Amino acid sequence: MLSIKEKLQFLAGSSKTDVPENDKGASNDANISLSELLQIDASMVSVNGSSYILREKSYDLNFEHGNFLLEHFSSITPKYFKYIAADIALQDYFPKDYLFFDTETTGLAGGTGTYIFLFGLGYLEDNKFTIQQYILPDLDSEPVVLAKILKILKRFRGIVSYNGKSYDVPLLKTRLLLNRFNVDDIDQKQHIDLLHCARRLWKKFTRCDLQSIEVEILGFARQNDVPGKDIPELYFNFLRNKDIIPIKPVLKHNVIDILSMLSIISHASYSMHNFDKIDESEKIDSHALFRIYKRMGETKKALHLASKNELNGDIALALE
Image (cartoon, rainbow, N blue to C red; front, side, top):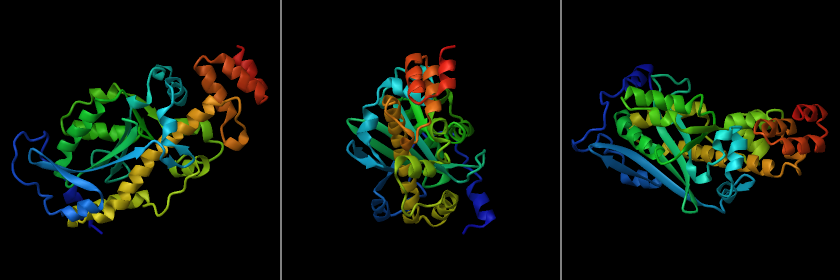
């Protein structure tokens, strides 16, 4: 375990504020062996004297996570993104318009002393769902990775996260500003934070942390998952000894986070599409669905749902 002094040395930060323009030779991460990278299905990417670790995996649409196939997500129509986010501004967004975003960091509190050492990005393309993971081999590599993340973000109209509005995206913006990048592109993205969706639809059935939603709603239980509180220490150990194998469980943890977001969207969309067939066994809050339909101006659906579930008070509200 690293001492406080060692952690402070690691977190002192890089003096680099821009991506270097010229190749200045090998990065100090050169002692990460190729064989270790292959064991985690990753590669080292060099950019003008800096490097980052890239891990990429694509999933066919018949891949099942919990009770849903990935193809359920690919077939969702824009109006259901509007319902999921309870935001009419999303009524013309398609699945391919969204970048799924999840991070792993050097601390859980956030703030200027916290680094994002792993960026997990997921997107739909060519009938596959691809997850890319960008890993800092050292803290000096942060500017080149941030530049890459910004470039990828520009390809998408929206962001999907789980608690990202409160944690991941504000931390990303902090790291960008500290490295003298512009954050206007991020501020202009539509953002679906699925924690808010989960609270609307399932709060009365379960806690709304992601793993509770997985077990109680999605029918998925993680096996041998690394606890979130242990993740920073695993990365600090990697910085010290350059042994990347012990952080492989962190990469798996990050992938599951993103796949679970897909399943949450699929489940919420299915429930909203089949609103006239759902019952309590499917763990959807009928009152919450009613409020979403009414907010989105879908009075006919709201009335039908209220009548079917004998929500008399809600019927009166819908007729106002």
